[in-house]
Length: 463
Image (cartoon, rainbow, N blue to C red; front, side, top):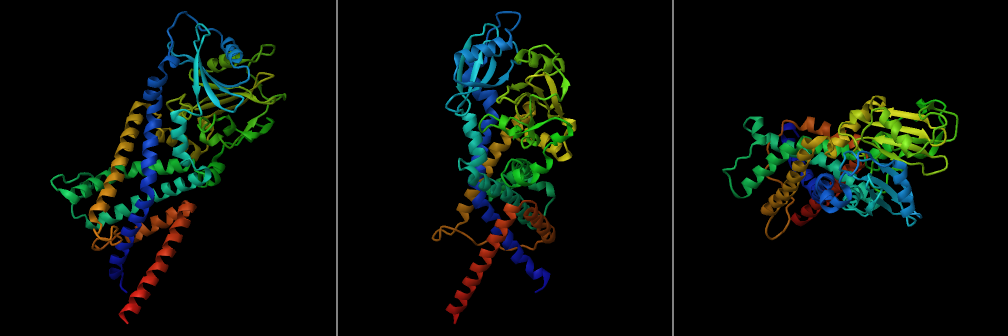
């Protein structure tokens, strides 16, 4: 069989794989877009609308009460709870924000008027709309199984992009930029097709970026392959004893606030003679002095994770992941011995590995945290992705055979000149993302088996 005679078969294969990927990906893409919109808009829009009275205060003095006195007010109000985290106000109109863990194991946000010490109220951090959207976005509420299914969806998004571009390319007789400009003069299914193709073209790079950065959080490609190799080597701080607990243990519930490349890194321990003096000897090591030290370093927006164990440390985190920084270039994580006041670790962006730096930049872009423009762009991407999914369903529905109710037959084949390049990219996807690669092989084998059975059945019927 000549190479030219293989082109129609290859085109039909690309069409089928585009359909297979779409059937699997669309439900997840709809879910990811909707939950993504909720998380994007929660802090700037939803939270102020729902909890405005807890988040804002009227300045009634020139100075705040001490942070330690505010902490004591919290412990008096919630004697059975453990205060795990403190976030100082960023403006004169903001309340102080503490996170406590109740005896039932629930993480709750508690808000304090920093001028009067009055406790304004609390709400559930674990049961918030953001936490629910975050958990659905990450696991589909199915735990590790859901995480694996979403990882597959992210991988198949790359397949969708590749096969969609491959199918468009042979048909295109005009300039390449026509791909981005729909012909609105058409109507019916042709118009839907134009809108679907152009929307997909505009979204291709964005979906590629979101898929790869999203994969960094998944349980296999992220947690087993990429993240371990790029976890910050805390051993560079020679002589600092480390715990069997990792930085990820500082995350409150399902919400990730610790920088990606630190999650699997062990925490340092308090109680040794290690470290350099941060808080002067003889000075109490408490929320006031720890906060004051961070401010002396020029840090203005950060949160402090209080020691949770006898050998735990004060962990000062200023990162885009915790929404305390706009630029990941300003990421900084400090650990202070709760007994000696010595600085045990000072981890900054310039200390990250190359891939960790790329992820530190990519993840806040993925989450829409890098300024207003990033937030607006990601919101538009989510809305266009919803349209892309809906238009794909409409295109399939309009083309299906009325009686059969389903179509597995591609349009007429058109000669494809880019197959070898597409095949190389396809194999690369399978190798780089093992879960996706394994499923591609499994589906290909099933397709070969069913194809052989159908041909055999047809041959028997003819005879």
